[in-house]
Image (cartoon, rainbow, N blue to C red; front, side, top):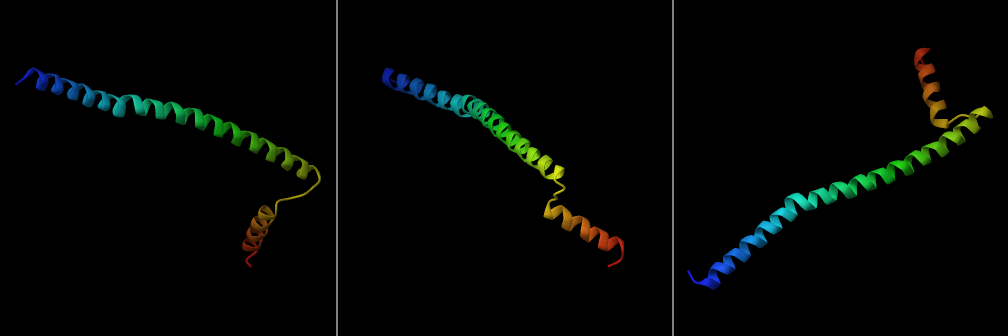
Length: 84
């Protein structure tokens, strides 16, 4: 085997090992890091949205309002309990 072939095999081996390291070690760790940050941001947004909705629910409850879906649910359950 000539010196050029030997160096070519070493370079190819290093490139393959580098790619495998990137694909199975570095890339997944970066994806996990990005997903953690994204999930945190989305969870914060969702909590803020729920807090706004809760505040609106409080205001509605103070004015004796109700959600139409809740009314329908309780009305149908009452009719079922009474046998209709």
